[in-house]
Image 1 (cartoon, rainbow, N blue to C red):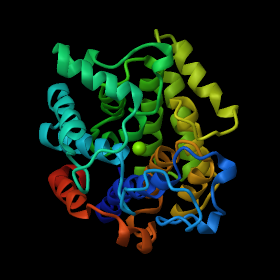
Image 2: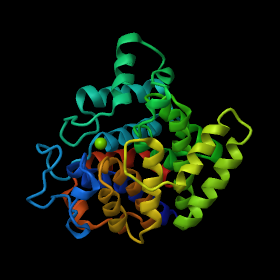
Image 3: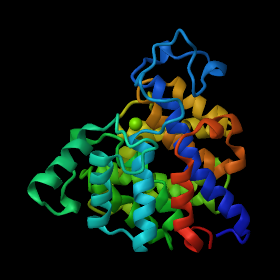
Length: 316
Ligand SMILES: [Mg+2]
């Protein structure tokens, strides 16, 4: 851990605002092929007038399911000191049904596995840690996109990996999704502890390999690691989503370029920019996020409330 608590606080704020701003930036560009995305310097919260916006009725600067669920996770971790499945699942249902942690109480985006899991939870009373669909085709990026707060809350590397994987199972039961969350959290923790991006990624890969070799997840862990060689597509598949975001982080040298690069991949733009933006926010700090985007971000009172709830635990 860095000894400089002010720097750590700036990184935690940066990580949280970074994922929320990335999500909000990506919302209007979602579902478009990369070829349809505007030029890099035209990617703003408000897209060019001629661009056909996704979620056209959603006000500029509004985060989507990614940001709301990350805030639910952060709030749940703050309140419980660790991960309480019942509380976290309750928060996710409150998001889906009542717009908890959304800037204006409206839910306009939900992933396939998450919708199924929350429906199952409501109907059947199944335990929250068994609610997530667990087939190989159920590996969307919905657990990865909200994972960042585990980096703020973890007390050790063991705790970090445990939290990253457990928060995922509520909506995504397959090991591949959980492993992507673990690798992402390891990268985030490396950055929070002061590593530069390239070092944080390679240290995380080494730790991840060590941890999952000779376990029941070895084959899946190998699959996740080897996908680094594939071209980033910005899709909703959790493995591609993870490596697309890491590619954006490693290929750029500031927050703004990182999240714009994520949007330029097209497809699941809000989520790629959210996942990449969380890491870039940790790396460059709150002060690295462009003021023009922070100014138009909606719901900052909610973010500040959740950050206050983290109290000393996020700053120690
Ligand atoms: Mg979304």
